[in-house]
Image (cartoon, rainbow, N blue to C red; front, side, top):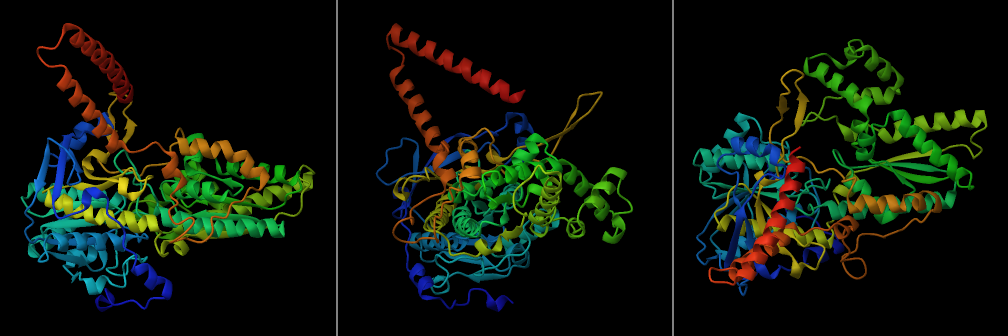
Length: 614
């Protein structure tokens, strides 16, 4: 019911204490003057898709990066915005609830009011459905009082995750016009921000004055690219899950007779599973990206786990903890193909109880091989993005059952000499999703909320709020904005046999998968054998808000070499220095040295760029 939104919460003593915590703004967002510096025009991350993106987004493609500067910063191209007329901004939660989302609302509301007390923030009730129906709640200090630094999305709620069809886009635009919104802030992940980019383009084409801004909030941690280092909610999810996993690890070590199979959230990517492994050191993790890259079958995965169980048994260890992401099931080639057949039949209107009779022979054989409970789960209608209902498919129970059968077979053959295999299965998803947000997520979301105001004050449309240099203290964070179109890629599908034609997908912000050549994966591989055999379980303990552990950040955030936005600024500074030094009238030696250096750099960059296009 709409009347339930925004009502004061009954807070525990801990929640009351958290509601009093005030995140600190980086120096670049402090004060009532907005200073923005625009960089060069942006391009697509993958040059091969640039033409398709530019054609689909003619009004919003190629916009420059924006950097927000502190009041004392020196910048020759900086624009100083002193006048702040009263504005009306709408905000909608489009993605799945993620810890810290409420602080985006708080940060934006505070920025609006501090620059002009007459400005208004309207929250759309019930997600995108509320946007279409123009159901709003005016955000006030009193309403925010019991939602600051709290988990969930119950301040405003959410329903559908997309604004995609022509009817939905037109409904959103009609709402923005009817409410005279100067800005619309969309909070969500890859799907929501792709929709935000499309809205921004449509609004610009229709000359609708509402500017659209996206905010990277998703617990899956898969909205990552050169501009976005982390997502709001990921830090909390991993810390809460890591404590649960470490508790299970301690239990396994104590009883010495159980294998725990734990499925974690992570639809298209295994970032949560990787981070939780690095924090809690379970014995094994099966990554969807590894399975897809190596084209491992369900039998390959079963053998891999059984070999690990057998190796541990030979050391007298008959227990262990194994992690896997919920998206693993879709990364197994033969299961993915089976799901595609099932979903195609479902879209054709074939009822679930008739599908087994209409599958191709190989798909039918695999379907009949699977346990009855899995058969029932993979027959569920797909999600709005055409993926399976991964949270409902108990992959951990499937693998536990297959491993148990194979271990019993080896036991009879005499190749396995350990104790009887006992599996216990868990799905850790919603237990972490509704948690109080970590200090990092409280700070990050609040700063992003403030950044949204600066983006709107700068008159930008189709941008995502960004904060970089996140592994350092918040007073060193760099705040800015990047066009969402610069984060888009175009997937290449089947190649035509005769003409060599390539079928292109729509430009979207695709989920970033775990980089199997990256530093985080390398760290995981370096420790894989030790984690598997030595039981070096690590307990990070409960989520901390003060004292030891309160300021800890995700291992993956600290290991990766990020701060792309900072490097872009650094490069521009070097280019400016070259222009300053090499002016008409400089010596021949200086000019020759500059030409030689620039020629070498250009040659290297040309080769690197051409390799990416191949």
